[in-house]
Image (tube, rainbow, N blue to C red; front, side, top):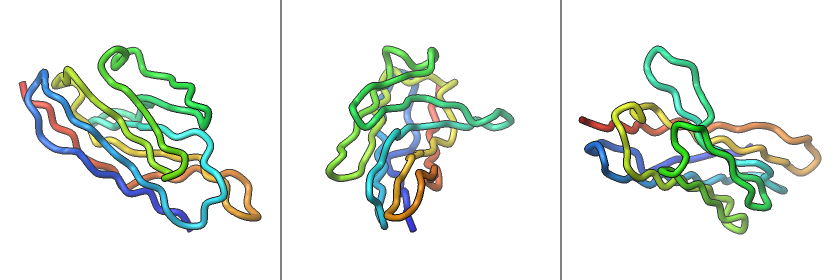
Length: 120
């Protein structure tokens, strides 16, 4: 099995910064795309940022220029540096990883989520 464990959420004032981290562990042959999603109360889960194994990145328009995603392939980790946070960034943030396990096809795994609250 594969587990994704997130850390780094919390309460911050508008304009502040937070860094989210996610570590994958378990029976992992390779991790392809990794990403961060978020879900605000009453809203659907949405992609915040994604990064391929080769390092290509993609961001939601709402976070471009403020958030930076990065990964360490050797450690199976992905991070999200969030700067200039706004109250509308308040949400539960989820880590996602497309994992290839030995003898299995690629499968998407999710972390348990970490709460980010941005106060005005």
